[in-house]
Amino acid sequence: MAMIILLCLTTSDWITILDILITSIIGIWIGVSVQKNLTTNRAVKEYFINENRDIKEKYNKFMNDLYSNHNSSEQIKEWFKVMTIKINTFEGFIINEYRLKPEISKIHNNLKYMITGSDDFNTQYKEKHITFSNSTKNQILLFHTDLSNCLTKLVIETNRANRKYLCRNKYGQHTTASKTNSV
Image (tube, rainbow, N blue to C red):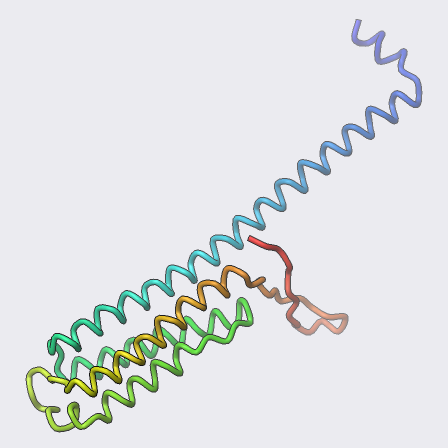
C-alpha cells in the first residue's frame, strides 16, 4: 500500500517532501550548532567569573589577616608573589579571550608597593606578626575597595563581552575576529 502511494506522487509532491526534509535537517543542524556554541561560550565566561571570585575571596581572607595582625613580613611577601602570578595569568587570558583591559594587576601592584614600602612593614620586618597603624590600615582599605570594584566591574564586562577567535587571512596569517553572540 505504501509503495502504491509513493508511486502515485507527482513531481511537485516529491519536491515538497524534499523541501520539508531539507528544511528540517537545516533547522536541526542550526539549533544544535547554536546551542553548542552558546554552551561553550557560557562555560568559558563562567570559568573566568569563578577565577575572579577566587581572587576576590583570597584577597578578602588576606585583608582580614592583615587587619587581625596575623601575618609576618615573609608571609606577606610570599602571598603577594603567588597572587601576582595568579592575577597576571588571569588577566592575560581575559585580555586574550575578550579584549578586556582589567586593572587588577595595577591595583594589586600599587597595594603591594604601599604595604611593603610602609614604615610599619619595614620597622617590624623581623617580628613574628606585623601590626599596621590605623592610617596604614585606612590606605589598605582604600586599595581593597578599589580592587573589589574592579573585580565586580570585570564580571559585568565579561558577561557583556564577545569572545575573539583566531582565523586566517587570505595570506594564511593568524588574525583575530570577534564572534558576536550574546550569552
